Amino acid sequence: MSIKLAILPRTREGLSREGLQAYLADSHGPLVMAHGEVSAMFAGYVHHYVQDEPSPLGAALADRDALTIIHFARIEDMIASKASPAYAQIVGPDEDNFRELAGSLAMLLSETTVLAGPEDVARKLFTFRHGADAQDAEGWAAKLAPILAAQGEDGPIAAWRINTVARTLEGPAPAELFDEVSLRGPIPADLADALTAAAQAYFADAPASVLVTSPKIFVSSQRIETMEMSDSGLPPIQRVVTGHDENGRAIFKSEDVTPTKMIPSGDASFLTIWSTETVPADLNDERDGRDLPTGLTLERGSVIRITDMLPGKESPFHRTNSVDYGIVLKGEIELELDDGRKKTIREGGIIVQRGTNHLWRNTTDQVCRIAFILIEAPAYKHNGVPLDEAKPEQVHPAYGEMGE
Image (cartoon, rainbow, N blue to C red; front, side):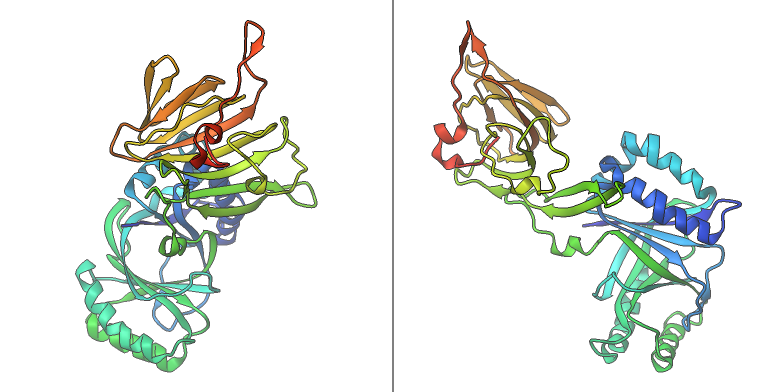
């Protein structure tokens, strides 16, 4: 079950609505995205900037200039993002530049989808149902369904979700239940009248407050619905690549979410993140490093690869002419050297592999995910004689051209 976090900041004293929104769009949002310890955990990250526009569904919610919604695939991801050094030292302190802590609100939400649809729209409407509670979500969804169906596939309402507050993290929630509506265009009078009548009947004339917003999507939450899991059963890997524009300024060049794929041996699944043909790398080479030909290592250059080792599986013994840095992201792995000595490296542990003959073994009942960074090196010389390489694809044909 995914986790949905809604944040309503109280604009910092002396900062206008336009100033807050500009800071969020141009400074804070990009800052969050630049720190993977924080944003790599996001399964969705959208700012909603409040507009001075009337709505036929209610009066404006006072003193709010923006609303942020963040999705996480798991509660553990949310905890890890907030607990990261980047959040504590950089992202968290930056929040003081645009918000007052007193009066800011944060809520964990439970979501009911009445009408599925895109979030990439010109306007989003949030309607806070004062006096309603979480128990009303199912009945309200049943009331809305025929009204939304009657507008047709290309009606002005592209999506409708009902959010109920599961837990407040900061401040009191403005309402225990609120609608989140994606709009293709203005709501015509007859549809607005039908929606208002339904709300008055269901919520017994309880008041409603509205935010009309313009969304800015940093990470689309709709990838949760279409996310392809890795062959190992673990989530796919988010990759963000930076570069430069024509003026030499930093840009986000690309972003993708890609699963690891099983190798023919069935021992593990792999995903190449990036590679270079030289060390040092050529930063003017605009090719996608994932597309460059790599074996287990390059004859020259570097590669970073994700390896998911399956439970009870092991690699063959192998030796490569490279310095390898292995970072255990999930689970634990056993490293065995050619004399039979073994070490277990647990989650968060790091291995520095310096051209030795070794194998990897997963002795647990859980998948172990490791990030490997391999950098070219000349062969280790023993008594002046270089030791021969023994790449996995040479030792075990099923490893083909892939590896750590």
